[in-house]
Each structure stands twice: as structure tokens, then as C-alpha cells.
Image (cartoon, rainbow, N blue to C red; front, side, top):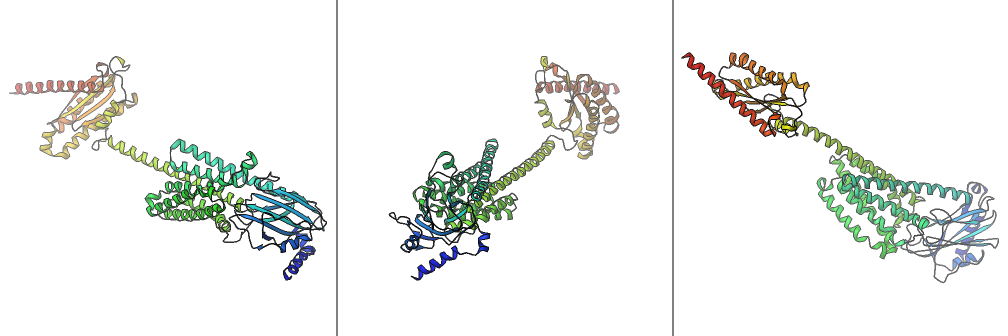
Length: 556
């Protein structure tokens, strides 16, 4: 009896609510009473019967997140002259929703909604009703579902206001889903281009995220009349799988922290094992998914911090991205598991927006990593170019060495009848360096070699502009090669004569210089070109030796 009196007083307090409060609220909806519903239960027939009907039911504090059949009853009174209103059960996926709006004026309105019913508004279960100012109503709602993603709540709003809010929420949802589609396709295309598996895993992660939320907001049901509650959480349980694969590669976790790498793999396999629960344990799959997602986010944040502390700078964007996911997750997931009350409405939309921001920032993280890889690649190219230049340069004289000469000969120079331009290969050799080494030492020999190289380089500098193939090489300790146009070979011979007459004879009489010449039109390949110059060199050496021998005999 006491309970009846308290309920009547509570109801009266709604009906005689102060004018100031009415001015602030378009509709006054009182505390929602929750009861178990049996299969044979029927809704109350009239306004006055509702209280006694509630007395016959078992009162509950909340619905079970593992699903069931429940009555939700609340007293309602409107506070303006609008006659068109909406009633709605929000905050959860519900398979079946039945509304009875029972008026004090003996009016009764009934509407059916839910996951499988046609939708009057985008992305919710609202139905339009008619209510008049000054009339008291009972909103009796029956909800039935195999699971509830969170505690359902009753809502009464002016029709135009609810339609406007529904359109705004739909805009945010479509923008987020569209952004996720773009990010998934973009990273998939990048993977096809560069074959970096981090982009593949990330694209799969974003794809799971957008499909999961598209199912949550009933996009397939709206567009294609596709209803399958069993697969909703399949994609949410799949989120940690692909994200763990992604951050293992992105954070280089196996190298930076092997323990966290193994722990991440363990959580990934736990998620894989949990995938069938989406279809075979539908009533508990929301709770299972919430637990796994909380573990995944916590582990990912920890891994990102560890890698950042170890000097992996792209982890900054990774942590920022997961912070966008962490904030709504901390506020929403405990409520999804029934551990805390819901802190705010439209939790699903807040999570979707946070997830879209997470996906966008992770894209920035990948882009930053690509930039770092590009910069590292450029540094390696510069290092390789310096190493290649050093490998092609003679350290003593600064001239290109034998490796550079052989490389230039492999560039496909024309020979024989195929040559349209005649080129000359002059082989210059110093004779007597071992004797000079024994007399004066290596430093003096190096001085001779550098002096000859400088003299030959002067010839090269004069003719360099005339042909890009012109160059001077030091191919052995005592040998140089000059490649130039055939008409310039006489300049080289004159320079070699000057070196012999004005440098070697005056300072190093024990050293002599010889040359051999050959032309590309007289040979068939680069090897034969060099050998022919060697033959001409040996021939010239023999001639000079005979001249010296004859000269020495004449002096006797």
C-alpha cells in the first residue's frame, strides 16, 4: 500500500510540476520503471489500470545486458501546444520494441519498432505520436533482444526537434563512415604500390571498424534490408586482431620490445578464439567484445609509450590516435559491461567519431613513417653515392680509378663499323718507378705520380667540354688512360713529351714515360681497345730502348 501511495505521489508530482520547469522542458518524462516481461503478458488497457498492472510485476533496477524481455514504463506530460511528438528507446541495439502511449483522456496509441522493423527515422527506433497539452500519459514500452549493448533509455521529444537531431546525427554518421571508407581504400592502394604489410593490416583494421559501425547504426538494414545480429560484434572482435598486426609492424615491436611483442600476439590469438562467440554466444558477445577491446587499447597505449621512450618518434602520432579512442572507450565500455552507469547519451556516435579521429591520426602516423623512411632512403642514397664516388676515385691522385674506367667501358660505346665518331684511347705508363723507390723512397715516387697526374689532368680539363666521354683515369700504380676525341690525341702526345722533357729529365732522370694509342673504329670491343693501346705502348717502349741503347753505344 505504501508503495502505491508513493507511486501516486510521484505521478502527481509529474502532473503538477511547476510552471518554471515546464517553461524549460517541452516534455516531462518521469523516472522509468523496469519490469520483467513474460511471454503471455499484455499491456495495460487504460490509464487508471496501469498502476495496478505495474504492482503485479517484478520491479528491476536495470535490464540485463545479456538480453531478455522487459517492460519499461514512465509517466509523461507535454508542456507546449505541439501535438506531434516522438517516443524513442535509445542507447542500445534492440531487436523488438513495442510502444503503448496510454492517455488520461482514454486514448491509446500503439507502434512497433526495433531492429527488424521499418524505420521512420534514420538510425533510431523512434515513432511519431500525438499528445496534447494538459493530458497525462503513461508510456509503456516492451523491449526484447538477445543482448543489449547498453542500458536502454526512454525519450520523448517534439517531432521537428527529433527529426532535426536525427538528421544531424545521420550527417555525422555518414561523414565518419565515408571518411573510414576513404582511409581504408587509400591505405589499401598504398599497400598495392609499396607492399608494406603495415598498410594492409591498417586498411583491414579500418574496414572492420567501418563495417562494425555500419551494422551498429543499421546501414545495411536501411539500404539493403539486411539483418543479421550475429555478425555485428564479429567485426568489433576483429578490430584488435588487425590493429595488433598493424602496430607490431608499425612500432617495430619485435625489435624494440620482444616481451610486449609476445604479449600482443597472445591477445591477438585470444581475439581469434573469441570470434565464434559472436555467432554462438550472442547474448554475451557485447560483453566479451568490450573486455577484449579494453585490453587491446590498454596494451596498445602501453606499447606506444614504450616504443616512444626507446626513440621511435612515429609512436607520437600512434599515441595521439589511440588517445582519441581511449577517451570515449573509458567512458563507454564500462557502461557496456554494466560496471558503471552511462555518463552521456549517444555513446555509439561519440565512439564512432573518436574512432574516425583515431583512424585519421593513424594515417598521419603512417604518413610520418613514410616520410622518415623517405628521408632515411635519401640519406642512404647520399651515403651510397659518396661511397660509390670514393670507390671510383684514386686516393692518391684524385683521378677516376680502374673501377671507374671499367664502368665507363660498359656503357655501350660503339666500336668498329658501328662507331659514328672516332675516339682515341691513350695509355700512359711510367717506367723506372721501382728503381726510384729504392733510391728516394715511396714519398718521392708518390710525388712523381701526382705530378704526372696533374699534368695529364690539365690536358683533360682543356678538352673536357668538347666530349662528355673525355676523362683521365689511373688504372694501375704506374699507368694512366686518357679517352678523348681522335683529333685531340696529338695534344696528349705533346703533353706527354713535355712531361718527359721538362719534368722527368730535369728532376727524375731514372723515370721515363711512354704512351700507346688506339682508336675505337679499329677494334670490336673495349677489351681489344685497351689491349691494342698496350701493344702500341710496348712497341714504343721497345723503340725508345733501342734508341737509348744505340745512343749509349755511340758514346762509347
